[in-house]
View 1 (tube, rainbow, N blue to C red):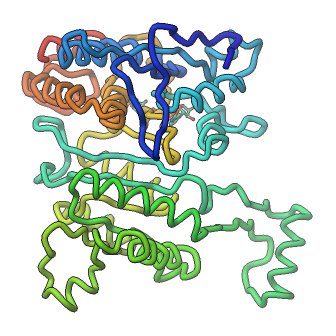
View 2 (cartoon, rainbow, N blue to C red):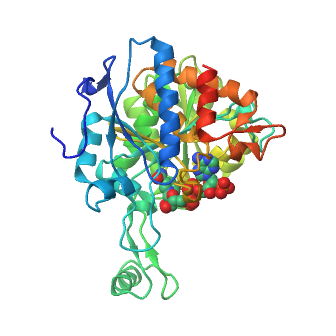
View 3 (cartoon, helix red, strand yellow):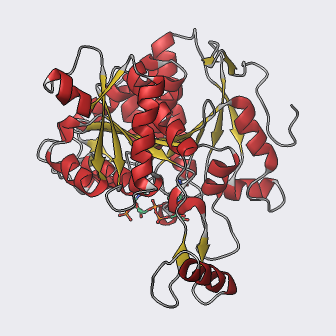
Length: 414
Ligand code: NAP
């Protein structure tokens, strides 16, 4: 594949997929997208940490060959005003694994969110957010160390499908008439109308990914989070399809919570993953009161949106929470916060969200030594109370440092 502005390093090897698995050489090419606003600062800092960790872990026997891809404002400067060049999309597919900083989404009409476009165009159907506590990170929880979960949020359906009709428009009135006259629905005159599609296909592929992850990483449960008591044929169906999928495809590895109590007196049989479900509102309580009971969480789009931010707050907030958007194999790892434009190029913000998204990326390609090194060096740095401004304002006796100095401290602690 040839590109106009993207340079694929000839020194590295592209990642491929064989028999459903990634094939990664010791010299893989990984894509990176700097992003807008603070993207430059956090990418520069994270890149230094990632490269140092790879060097430290493998002593020069393995190396990442980075290919810069362009989206957002940087792309507009290079591609004559085009914020979303087609060749970037091609390269993300071609390289399979990439990491990206945040992108600006102007508020108001006429501009589709670049993040949403990327997710839709590449069908990145799972938004994956691990939530893990590091000793010393400021947290509102009494026992934040009990929070250790990974959320698989469905990324393509639900109220995010964009099927909405504004009050007073002919489309809205046509649909309202149909709903009232032909379907017997009752609702207030002039209501805005949104449609919430949730399919067996979309639910099952998300739950499949969550269960595969639980198996690969030795987790003991997968919790389906839904609002099925009220929205029976969407949220309730997600729950039903989740259990169905587990029974159809993972009967040997999983057991439902009902069966656990019916046949095993609540004692988990060795090696089995318990598939359970919780109603969304209760789940928010449980993740504050008894978070240790949950590990892998699979949920619908809107629930997942709320839940991932709420859980991130329990272990240090958005400045530190990592994430990824994934299809079956293509994965884009990304900072979960936005572009924080007021801090652009001030070398001030916390790079950890992007840095840990990179850690997830290294785990994904099987270079787990790299993420382990970063986690341990980060832990040491926090214990030394060397932090960026966001943590400094929540900690007593902290030394506030810049983005780049924070990266230096982490590298020094490897
Ligand atoms: P934001 O950029 O996440 O910033 C909100 C606040 O969060 C910041 O003012 C800052 O708080 C804190 N924050 C964010 N990143 C931080 C970091 N790395 N370190 C420390 N603190 C951090 O949210 P926003 O202001 O609502 O959105 C700005 C733009 O980003 C919008 O165009 C939005 O659409 C876009 N956005 C993009 C993505 C994405 O690309 N995935 C995600 C969300 C938003 P303080 O002011 O308290 O210091």
